Length: 302
View (tube, rainbow, N blue to C red):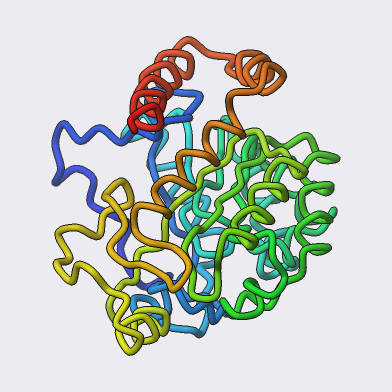
């Protein structure tokens, strides 16, 4: 299906809808997906089950048209691109940046969905900055090359380092997503991940315990090994407790490592100061305080 043939989302059918993201700069942020599909084959990801493995790109003109409608009709002050990988095609990204720059208004733009590090080249990062992007998220997952290979990431630690360097050179804020509890991990691999997170030092780090979603290879592997402890999908939300164990790590161990990671990453004076300096807007300050307090309470629990 040609994605340009699909109508724009009917936000008018959802009166009173308020879309918020914990780290938005502006109160009225609204989402866009400019593509469908992902070339990745990560064992833990269910995106290919939803959107397929063939990437389909909407035309840059159509994306810009949707941005105009979100701003002029719905009052959007900020746009979030939730694509699986917004930086897959440099020619397409160049055209999109040109279309966005030609709009008669400026919006704050964030890419919170998580781009692949091997696509965030210096040129891609510069194009994002040119079109108004202030923040980009990268799916890092692990600081162990052996675990990255087992996950099917098809990326190297050096590529991840290079992507962060490119983002910083372009003046972009960085988020890093880390995944704890993949098969093959033990205390040594988790320590490697935490050490890598501290070395990369993204502006924001998220440490999630793996959730083995149905249909993913990692779920099948854990099921065969008898490592699933909860098969009720009501328990598969990101904030929910772990639903699996590993040979070297119990569910309680995984939760303990998650809390340790958050404490060691954020409870550093330099990180706390840099967090305050990057906030910039009153709305962002309020949302950071709210989310931050919830995180402090959670990781402080025994």
